[in-house]
Length: 399
Image (tube, rainbow, N blue to C red; front, side, top):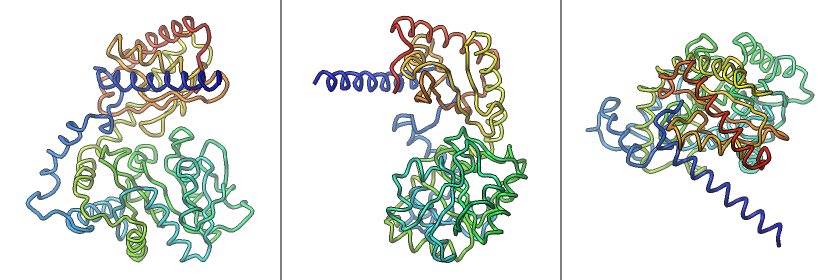
């Protein structure tokens, strides 16, 4: 019973810390990123005030996927250079359906992907449980699969799924040459290529290519409207017209034929208008921030710290520090509460014994930060880390 009570106390303490962090973030005056999904409902609804700039609001509201939904689908197809696109309420649904359709066409339900890809880590085995697909992991290395690994894989597969960028490995991307070689290797095996492009919008700066040229490498592409574009939700599947039409049939079967979706769709159109053109600027400044973080940790005498990748591939990256997660989370909350500056707004997670990581995103709010601002915030943060560690008499309780 004592162990159960101790566990409950620890769980309650962590919940309170999460709530404190959320409040501290809302009240902070300086952050590196202020994604709309954390905003109060009033602020989220205010986003739709921009809708008149992206669509004729005198048009009838959508019913079961027509009207403004079709306008968004055409816009996405045009941006990605595909024959067609279909709007989906979630990316999980869009990708299951895409790979299910390809399995029917190739005759092989096996999907080759990375061990850290979203369906493997975050979707509770949905590919297998719901969509009669079978997944095989090409690699577990913290990078995208190589052409050699694809060619040497020991069994046939109908589709190769590539997550661009690979979020759980640190938002990493291959080089353009590596990506084209991987696609070629899959085609040599008579497999189709599907891009999990939830954050594909962010990749143009790294690849030095426009979106349509990147998407052209794949047979189908999924994109999200809230991860990079700050929309309310939603996703799109883009590819050949015949595939998209088949996918719309399965969308209905999966429960994705929603009566009206105009708020989410309008927020997506606003994101394409407002956020998409700014993403390269965010990526460029993320590299300034990452370099300043490395310098700041070195100047603060942190015995081991990593910014991964050292030069971010997108406007998001990981930071690793040699402390337990609760110590770092407490220090982050304290910094925001006491200075109204929140350097690390995302949760800290255990990455190993005495080692934790968090994700850093740089968006419009972070563009005003200079390298000196970042280094000063690092010094202040590490002072609080030392104070919390000393007060607890340990490095913290791992999550």
